[in-house]
Amino acid sequence: MAKVNRSASTGRFVKEATVRRHPGTTVRQTIGGQATSYRSAITGRFVTEATAQRHPANTIKEGN
Image 1: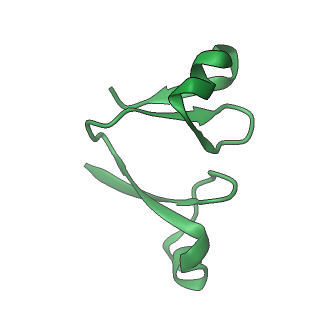
Image 2 (image 1 turned 90 degrees about the vertical axis):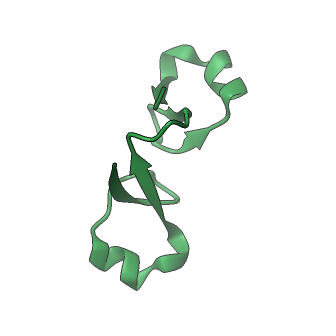
Image 3 (image 1 turned 180 degrees about the vertical axis):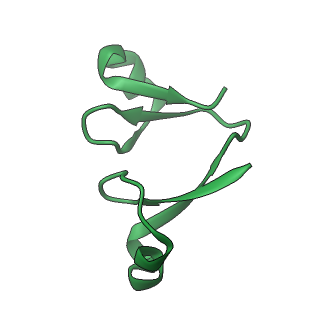
């Protein structure tokens, strides 16, 4: 499984150097895991399943 780094505020991918400079505002994500998550297609931020159900046209399902 691949691991990627994302900005916690924007959801955008960031480089390893950015993670070292700003460890409190970045998250490490495992791609290809078993968990299902939802992301806003507009902001890139993670959203709850309830939000994804209310706004299906604006959310992306990741995982299984």
